[in-house]
Length: 588
Image (cartoon, rainbow, N blue to C red; front, top):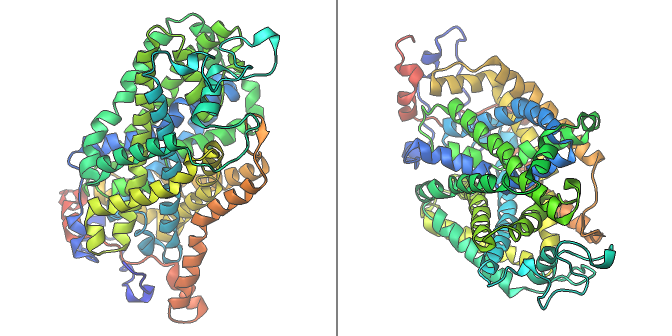
């Protein structure tokens, strides 16, 4: 779909505010006759599991427990739950609802809601693409760990491997030395990542990582090649299996020596931590990334719903599943970390590590101490892969849906071919993550691809929907679909609280920014410029498209701007209006 001058589109029809809502929507707007032919989820449960699988990822079992540890244990739940209510829930609801109503992906809806911000769709697609590229590298690492789990002896449980240094230790450092790495840390750094002792950045290709990344993309393709028709079936396993594993780990974890000490550390709050800004910023960022807001994936998944689907119910269930999983995973993690602290004669505070290190160092180290460690290792790394794959489905769907909605041709109509091309391109770009600089590249992409640029994208998204299109019109759209009036609290969140929180967190993230480091070694200075370039690669499309739209528009500059901040006629088909419960209801 090429850009059109807003003057070429009919503006929203004038309606009488005293007119019954159903009468305002009786006259259909048909901008695309094929809109009603859009693929739909086979069943509601496929949509729900896809949303849960997309939202519940590696961060739920790695990042959330670490943030609890860092910010006062149970005290962290206070800002987390506050921002969940005023930011997470409303934004999740907004994205699912706008996608369901307009039946379009993230690259098409802004053309109608706020033409001057049409570049938002491109920004969302590029952010999803970048994150998908490095996220599949995490899955590739998990694949290599899974492969290594079939060795006669778990390689990270001993210091007798060819890559181990003389400073390696398993549980307790040799001769009281303060220098050295654990066996699992040396397995990751010197075997998987092939780093040298100085952690020098090198771009030599690592064949074993290339093979693992290739396998990860093959799995992604065959799960996604038919779009929601294929991924909707896969999520029956990928979205439910992690819960079975977490339950098994919890049952095993609470029976381990020292587990009580870890759980106590998790649930006993340290309220003094709430006096500074860190837990509040971390709470917002965790909700932001955990629910995948701003990537366009939720909009894309919502667009495949039936028009009268009860989207408010779905948003609540997804919130319950995601945050419930994070809190539940906290008990699993800290039970294992308590055990790990006990056997290494350390405090819990000294065994907790951040993010990817928690998933690939602390967990495997604890697994090596369990009875039947090979079985637990295989189960754990399969779980990591399924958690990652679910999130991958949502990001690839956002990219493919955005392309197909923007470009209507024979290529985009052939879903398997389009997904294949996307997967091949992303695999080739991702080869930079298969070098000896893998951990550095992934860390840069993790911080900058979905960082401040994503916050600005979501901020502009709330402005476009709540202010330009109008929170009252948007609420009427939801009422048209569901037959239920929107709670006034959601309107307040959409219009005031969400933009304010996003802007405040954006400013705090700049003020409290810390340079990247790994293993105590700071990243080279050039990585800062690479990160800024990655951030701009997505956000830059918003001003570029805005300028382009202003140039091609007719009239004076003030007339052009007025036209471009005026919503256009929405692409709602007559079939959708016939499905509207408001129109069917006798009370109207």
